Length: 245
Image 1 (cartoon, helix red, strand yellow):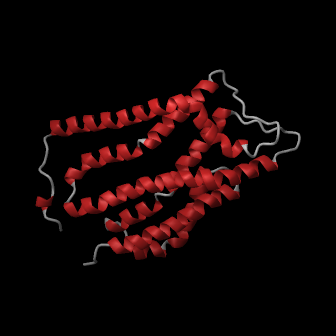
Image 2: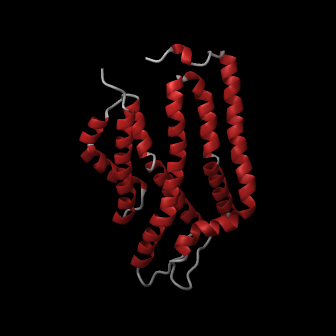
Image 3: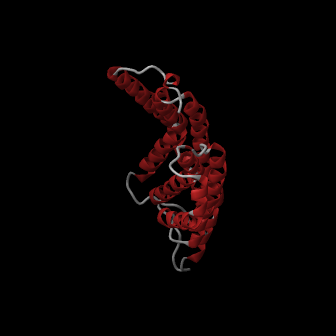
C-alpha cells in the first residue's frame, strides 16, 4: 500500500469549489477560443468534412439544405463541435489537475501516460473514421440506391451522421485504456479478460451494430479494430498488473 504522505495536503471545501470553478472556466475558455478561430472558416471546414461523400456522388448531384437556417446553423454546429474536440486535451488536463492532488505519486506516474494515450487514441479513432470508414460506407450507400432516385443529401443530416461516427470511433479506440485501467486497478485480471475474449468479440459487434449504420461493412470496420485494441490493452495491462498476494 502506498504511503499516505505521498499525497498532497488536503484542501478545504471552499478551496476545492474555487479550484473547480477556475478549471471549468479554463475549459470553457479553451472551447470558446477554438470556436472563434474556426467559425470564420466554417464553410471551408464543412467542405473538407463532406468531401468523402461529395467525391462519390453521381455526376450532377449535390448536397442540399432543406431547413431555412441550415446554411448558417450547420457550419455553426460543426465549428462548435470541432472546437470541443480540439479542446479535449485542455479539458482533460483541467480534470487531471483537479483530481491529481488526491492521487499517490505512483498513481500519478501511471495516470498521466494513460491520459495522454486516451487523447491520442480518440483522435486516431476519428481519423480512422474519416480516411478509412467514410470512403467505404459512402461508396456503398451511393451505389445501392435505385437508379430512379437521385442522391441529394441534406447538409444537416450528413453532419449529424458523421459526428455520430466520429464519436463512435473515438470512443471505440479507447478500448486499450479501459482494459489497462480495469487490470491496473485490480477490478479484473489479464487472464480473466483473455478468457472472456469470445464475449468481448460479440460485444464489439453489438457495439458496432448500435453505433453505426445498419450495414455489415461499417459494423465490421468498428468491431474489428475494437477487438484488436482490446488485445493491445490486455497486453499492456499484463505489464501493469499488480502482483497477486
